[in-house]
Length: 264
Ligand code: SF4
Ligand code: SF4
Image (cartoon, rainbow, N blue to C red):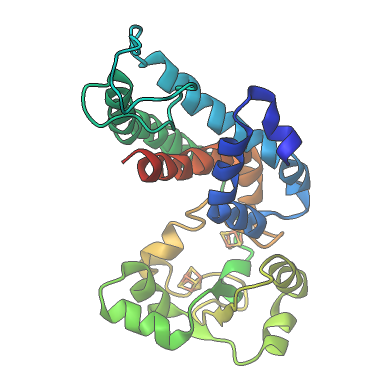
């Protein structure tokens, strides 16, 4: 890992970025299926792509006459990069850091939103094949009671979820529903407890018996290109198409939070 990060001379900082990005790591790990192994192997590269993109964007807004080697006695810096600690007043590089946060949380984030819209609009190129797999076996990190509590507190996703899904009593029963998907979930979600659900509204022909009135979470499914899907799901083709872009987007989004934390 450190060898990989050492090429641009910012190995320690890059390594910190990588470690800070645990959430992305776990999201990534939770979302892979067989066809994603190659992407997993390329993960460091995708993450570095995000790091380099942000760094080059910030270089573009770095003031040309940023450091005039002023006599500010608080400044004893030899290396002057975006993560250095500059004096709070009278230093253009400190101003650059503040501009960086404004840029990343403003125009840069807007670009990411455009990328997200592109990803989601590509989903329209694919159609549900009506296999019913997502209705017969759904998973959540929350227990049924937790979901109901979240729904009562106004969480719309939880409200939709408990309006149709009910718990599957045991892991053995969940496994019988879709052994391959069950195994995949268990293999990839190793640390966290997950809960299994099914929707009684799916018919034997796999069609939804309340199709016209199905909740938004069903109309919108799958709403996340990083989500693990059953192998039967025709939207795996969409996931494959947008996987790189989606990973990059997630890495960049997490990096914005990191920059805010470091420079704020
Ligand atoms: S409401 Fe219909 S679409 Fe939604 S999970 Fe149930 S059967 Fe599937
Ligand atoms: S698993 Fe995918 S293809 Fe199958 S019913 Fe659900 S959305 Fe449609």
